[in-house]
Amino acid sequence: MKPFSRAKGVNAAVSPESASEFITGLEWDCIPEDVVEHAKMCLLDYLACMRAGSATEATQAARRFASLWFGGPQTSALGGRERMGLLGAVFCNAIAASELDIDDGHRAALGHPGAAIIPAALGVGGMLRSSGKELLASIIVGYEVGVRAGEIIYSQSKERFFGSGTWAAIGVAAASARLLRLSRPQSSAAIGIAEAHAPLTPVMKSIASGAMVKESLGWAAVTGVSAALLAREGFEGVESVLDEAKEPQRWGDEYYIKRVYFKQYPSCRWSHPVLDAITALLRHHPLGADEVQEVRVYTFAKALSLANYRPKTVHHAQYSIPFTVGALLVRGDVTPRDISPESIHDARLLDVARRVRLILDPDREKVFPDKCTARVVIVKRDGAFLESPVIQARGDWDNPFTREEMIGKFLRLTTGALTEHQQRLTLRLVDGLERSELREVVDGEEERQCLGI
Image (cartoon, rainbow, N blue to C red; front, side):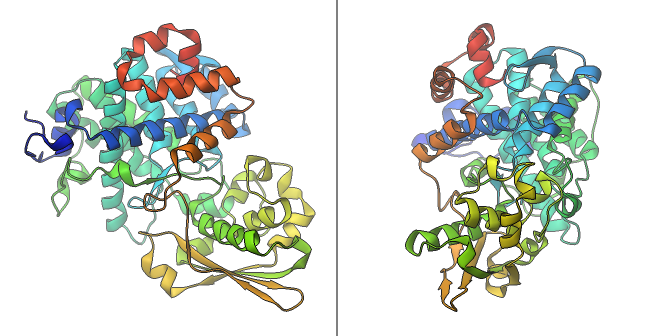
């Protein structure tokens, strides 16, 4: 098949007609360089999130379960600390990556692709000893197929909000099919199987109750890899939502991975413009938490669900604007240490949280989900007001972090989990991945652990 990307100004585009044609036909030399760089940044961000989330209670429960019940080809889980069957490893790694709610996301699908797609690609790619180019291409394919599927599912089901696991499984299947070198019919079957087997992911229940299941990304990873392996054996699936779409997809034209957002706070993305707005106010008007009488948050409708004033669990706190505002005003930042089993009982923090009011702003609602915005008014005890402009969360594709800021996030989240030498080695491995063979990484103990293969 002819290349169909307009990369590097060569070869007129021949647009593929289906997801399976995109999965099997994307050629490395036709992937734009900036798309490859975005894939590397997503990989680095995943590694940081997975490392930071590896020691949590939910991840350790998943590890015990997977060690007992998932057999098969052995691969690394939780950054090389465990060896277990492929499906168990991708299950644990996906849960770890999503545990702190600091993993990447995409506005079009209203959810999180990387925490499911990347551990699956690393697991399958490591097992097959694929090239670094193939690993990166599979990640790009996974994001493209998964996010597009999520966008369609979201547009068709406004009454029910499906979480990331529902559509990320389709992206995982696409990435796995690419690495397994499935044929076009097999690749089509893989994404159809994944859609039929995908978790329903009632994410609003997780937001309300603070459940460990969150967005079902562990099962999305297992489902997607299983779908590709089933397709390889001749199992057939339904026609995918991508093939049924009324509007034809423009595959290889504008890559969705370029519009991924990254997070600096371990909390639901809907809280981030609020935290950015307060940070900006405090930069110019320093004040102590005791000086605050009320914080008025003007936001969009879905963010009103983040109203947990006394979170019962860490996950409950991640889905709480009042709690994260309290953490910021009392502790000066919102880090994993500030959303911890100890912090959710911090009386001073909870006292500030109860002074936060969430208010629907029709103008913020109009631009959501394309933009995640908020504005904040802080009422001081002396009667003075501090008012922010409308703030868009930093880290969005059109308000991005710098490369240095992303490296800084990786270093912060992996300090203690990796030595300084391992941190530097991981950065080098990711930066030069397209020039590597995964067999070299798998055979090198320290390299394998750094990439979690």
